[in-house]
Image (cartoon, rainbow over all chains, first blue to last red):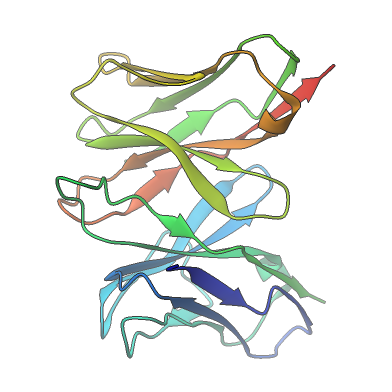
Length: 116
Length: 113
């Protein structure tokens, strides 16, 4: 079965360190997204990609970067982790909307990041 | 700009109906979605409605859409303890065939005996 997986599921790091969260999908979806989930804010879009070598900033992109070198992977990098980046991070992917699909998002299980 | 709002908490008795409400601002939204998040898990699509529909029913779930007021609701009939979760309303942005979804903050549904 096709799926979307994130790793690590839990990570604790220190302020100032670089952190990379991995996201891998086997749906062959063109669209991939990173969200962060915080209490009271719901899901906020960090970065997204509509295909290989395409990346776009979301509403809370400062301090984060992504790269898309193939269809399956969209790693999220925190260049210099800050305590404000303590959160749960969700990766998602989607195909194009067509007659058979609304193009809904499929989510990974999440990565809980704690920055001390 | 795009914004989706929903109440943060709802408590219901097992067997009663639950109604979760959502308002959105983008009148050009093509699809509106309800996602369910169980503890420690990612979000899963529960149901959706196309913007030219007023109502959609799927077993115990009923979605109502009032485009004039930009109001979306999810009714769960005969609510069970397994329905306890966070429910997110989301709208699909006006970007054609792509899927940039805007989410609300989520409504935590607590079902008690």
